[in-house]
Amino acid sequence: SNRAAWMDELDNRLVAALARDGRAHLSDLAHELGVTRTTVRARMARLLSSGEIAGFTVLTRADVAQAPVRGLMMLQVEGRWTDRVMARLAGLPAVQAYHTTNGTWDLIVEVAADSLEVFDEVLFAIRRFEGVARSETNLLLSTRRPVRRPA
Image (cartoon, rainbow, N blue to C red; front, side):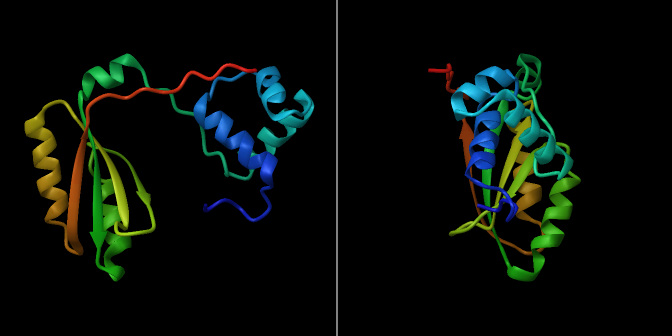
């Protein structure tokens, strides 16, 4: 993982817990991690002030309704073009996020559109970016988040 060198196992577990539920209460986080609320509060403050946690996101029903066609696009990019491809992705409103990754694919792009037609246009545009060698796209049929309750 690409975490800051100073982060320890507790920080990593706290970030994972917040990724599952960004609205978790301090007491629930403390219970789950086996530490005090004061420790959780201090760790969260440090992670936020360092920029390791950049913010919290809520996906609402309206967000999904506005962009019912969603997918993940995997891109293979010729080495020196990665920065330019990422800059161009950042300029596309349909691009929700993009991730650098290891393995066969260099970038994974989250795309959302209000119709299959628009979705297809976005994919076509990205495939034509200079430096994009190969791509594969998977439509997301449904999204479920696990509900985890403190033990």
